[in-house]
Length: 312
Length: 308
Image 1 (cartoon, rainbow over the protein chains, first blue to last red):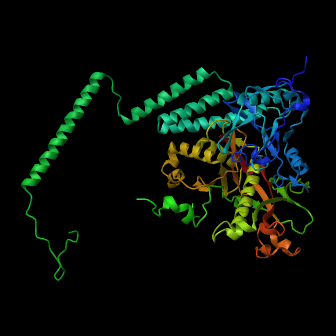
Image 2 (cartoon, each protein chain N blue to C red):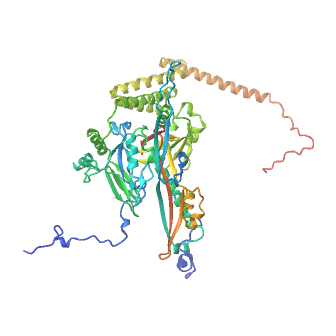
Image 3 (cartoon, helix red, strand yellow):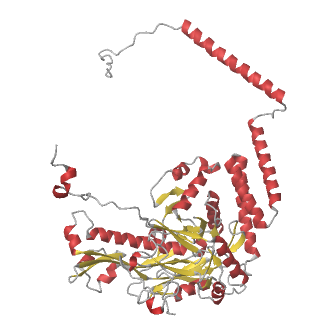
């Protein structure tokens, strides 16, 4: 039986080669708009003070920074071939107690070697740092969690937040970031308490829906930061907010209306007052017409011409 | 009727497909210069080092009360330093002789290209400033949540609690952060509600300087960093960020420069020259600038991290 070269299993010497028939190499890659600002590689960094609370991440998380390999930025020098000499920048960061999590950090490599799923696909790289070609030449550096979505001449990026959160959790678990100090948590909670106080003050002053919703958001964040029960916080919000609205309504109306009958009586009284006012106005008008004096002729200074109507 | 001399019928022979407008329209680009928000250090030209060290000293000692005739021991003076490292920044545009031959007056001439390169330098410095902002250890805002007036107050209070002396204070934000702030300002009450500056903050303005509010000068720039979730804007007081630039005057004294550079003022930080290659009839318009930007004092700066 003769050997057939099929599409499914082509002989090695008969594999199709891609031939570029049109355009140049630089026409391939991501649209330039949306890639500027990412032309240089970077390392993730973390500082002991940079922890944050976010509903997006479902709690406290290390707020990673970036050490850009940009000559001229933060003591990074330029090399003779345009490369970045990082020593000065690294020394500066370490002096300030930053931790540098390099892309080839063994724990990071181990994490990606275990093939985590990013953007619904099994990731095949070994580092968080990804390099992309840009149309017209040049490179762009983003994390593995950022996926480019070219739309027309723009490159848009979407981030796989759950995958990034999983990566952060791994870094915490493996001790690759600075530990979360309880003192730090206390200071953040205090700051949030101040925010809640400010939001509450705004509601007390003017209980609009917007201000009440801001107060609610701030109060829920505080409860979650403290690790309190959310329902308790909601009950507290409802009570506080309700009391303020009642107080505000009370301040506007001298005495609260007790019953429906009283309300009806008040409305009747208001109607009567309005009728009396209308009658008074009508009486004033009538009397003014009856006693209206004859208009005196306009007085002019001697020698001054009469006003001429120029409007035609 | 037939064979009329019409624009539709005879344009190919007797007319032009299009004429060039007298002016070139410049599309939207970030043009805000943030260099005035930076404390500039000595120019290291002629010193032999690309690194400028800023000596720092902390006079925060409080006198003690020794006994009347008691010996007084020596106190340790707190010292530290910050450094700024100069590096080359550059951009090149090439243009052919033929294009310049044919270009009408007021077209894309060498001067216009040079001006574009100068703006690229300004933009680069802004990017380096925002890199420095991104290394602040104090961060306010909520990841994934839009910027609010409350975040701004958090930033202000952080600086005030750090005992930062009088400003000027600057805030550079991404445009999205600023419009989120505007949305939040709309619902502001209390002391700020009836200030003229509050109303002014809500007026539409061009990119760049967006007004002063609560004692802060606000700028928007496209150079604000982001991590795919949040923008990293910032609020800082003068002295938070340090920078240095090499000025062309020092180079002029040592190297015979191209004619284009001879007309550059000595204080120019970016210098544009023409590198002409006759054999290919190509003119390289090259701009070089030498600068370094770094954080000087961490306590004077707060990063504002809010959603994109």
